[in-house]
Length: 309
Image (cartoon, rainbow, N blue to C red; front, top):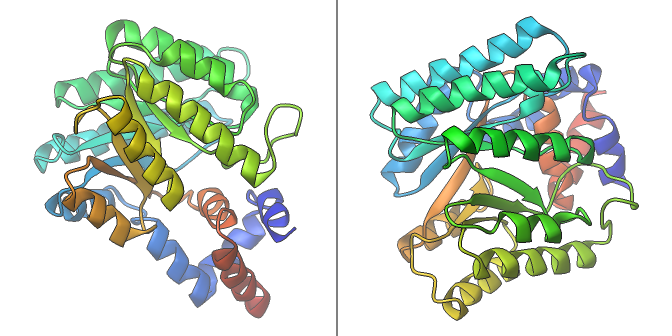
């Protein structure tokens, strides 16, 4: 119940301000978000790279409804890639882009604006020898996002996509995208979705994740297994062995600030371990969705908000 309440207020500016001012909540922000500036993202990337981990960086923002904001987000990514290149980190880091942040939801030509902005980011990434992954958002954007992914891959075949296991359509999408060179991040899904399009029971979501993981690991693409669940990590390793996948033909992904010891363990075992690093001042919606995935963190945040209120 608490998870549902927090997801429903993930866009609340009032609660965002409460979280900013409340010391316990602020500590959680600092744990899960690298900072608000480009240099914060570069610093976090350098620290993770020094430990042997890979990185994907998300400039936080979504549901952009003004062209100027979409352009600003695009420019922030270009500046980030320049900064990563100057720091010599693009061999360890890529970027993750939400299409809604670069214009997908704009009226009229929103999809074209988002595609053009994403194309500019892909072009800049390519100059530094790195890649882009298109994040997936709520189910109403899935078809548009996959369509833009197909277009971008015509010129930048290394562009990654994301599939959410809790959507009922995802097994079919996995079969379509488990092709040679196709980089696909598989996650459970963190948006509030109706039961008509998504599994809502935790056990059903876990089983769907395993089914999707089997398809990707059996295919010819490059699976990116985004999970913190120890059982799913173990199953991923077993599937790698069963399908004769060598290290470097797949990777694990985890969020910044989540299970850092497990991240280090997998890295020490020779696994490719990539950390999803968010930064920027639009952190509130991201943070609430992350906390909603873990009841203990939900409780801590709720107490912080109540005590502040």
